[in-house]
Amino acid sequence: MSDKVKIIKPQPISGFPEYLPEIRRVEQLWQDTARRVFERYGFCSIETPSVEAVEVLAAKGVVDKEIYVLSRLQADEDEKTEGRLALHFDQTVPLARYVAQHFNGLAFPFKRYQMQRVWRGDRPQDGRFREFYQYDVDVIAVDNLPLHFDAEMAQVSYELLAELKIAGVRLHISNRKILQGFMAGIGVADAAPIVRIMDKLDKIGAKGVQETLQKSGLVNDSQIEKCLTLAEIQAADAGEFQQKISVLKIDNEILSEGISELSFVMDYLKDLPSGAVLADMSIARGLDYYTGTVYEGRLINDPGFGSVIAGGRYDDLASSYINKNLPGVGISLGMTRLFSKLLKDGKLPALAPSPTQVLVALPNEEMRAAAQAIAQQLRARGINTEVYHAPQKFDRQLTYANKKQIPFVWFPDSGQVKNMATGEQVAADAASWQAY
RNA sequence: GCGGCCGUAGCUCAGCGGUAGAGCUCUCGGUUGUGGUCCGAGUGGUCGCGGGUUCGAGCCCCGUCGGUCGCCCCA
Image (cartoon, rainbow, N blue to C red; front, side, top):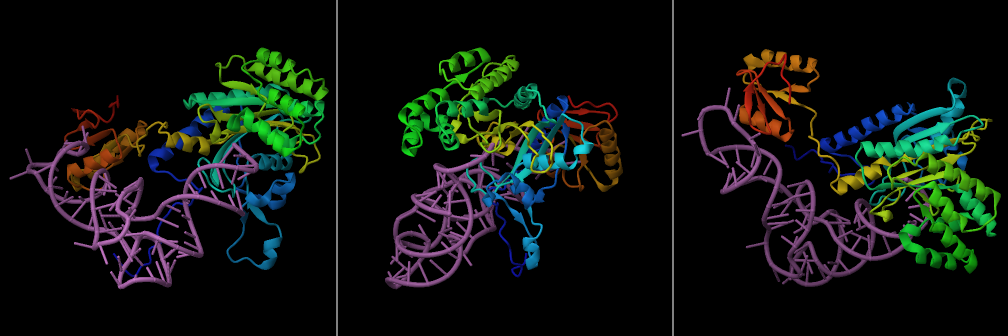
């Protein structure tokens, strides 16, 4: 109580999410689950610094307007130009740098997962943050990386979502070579801008894509028709995909290669539940460096929300940092985006704000040692236990347990345990008591 | 970076020229140290900030900052 102290009004920083304990516990549950699933497939964990040298981040010619540069509040002029550091905007570039740097210390194919925050200076929006978690899974090999890994990425992603009981996400898969070969086959020189428009198919519809392409003036009507035909191809399995794409009748070597690769991947995934993955020719993520398989996870019921998973295969990932040929394939799960969506829709599991299972009540100061002894016995048996901090009236202590949703309260004076959900109270022994 | 909407209590919002409100939260109480439900009472706001119009501004005008939605781009 002072009118002299200047209060700095606490307020959230847009684009930098933070949660109450009960929500954070769900986030932790996601992380624990992801770790278990990734390790089940033999991926090991690495962690890289939050910052990289600006020149490392910029090596792939990424737009730098979204990169946060790090500087001290009072930096000398020469520090501002030399050896600048910036927050990483993804985990693929740091991985490439890491692999190049530790090349001799790693066994290949190198399978790693990485669950860190990344930063982008983009304008925040629904589902778009400036600081967010990505769970990245990648495999990097020397010279040759078997296609099985491309399928494994989809499999791991699916398995994680299933384990988290997240329904409504579908992984769309394509292959960059198909678009590339197709564009060459119909006589388009610069595919990128056209592909970017085709990518909006699910958002603006076939008509929207057609009109946008017409307005762009980059392609003629006959080409537009072919582009639309291609973009609208979706298939649940390899057989359906080959049947649908064969009607295009475009002869191009790269196109054929892409078709065969995508068929292989889809065939490998045939045992996943139907609807889990979908071959989809309209997707066009990461035009800059993906060279083969590309993935994009979208919400089935809200396609306009944006992608929650993105990834793909890239040849020579680390060529900017080492003179080796290191092909890789990886997938990045945009967990903060997905998390915020489920939170908003009320679809996250409801957890208590505290991990405490038993609150040992404190009747009076004389009982403190006895309360502590009970708590230690329970903790030794793996039960999360806390002792109430002060000898207050029991209604205060119970209110505390109630607010933290602690399921059991132990009364050391009577030697009884109260089940907060049922109100039932029974005698118990800390050496053998079971919660349920 | 460019356009539309919005800033009132801790939270969600009502009030749209004339004494600043509701619900939820929070605190206390409803005798016997036993919570949640229910009932009662109470705390809490220079109405984002600065200027202007007016007898009078939360309300109208200008500016500014912040938020939000869409576009670009992306997880």
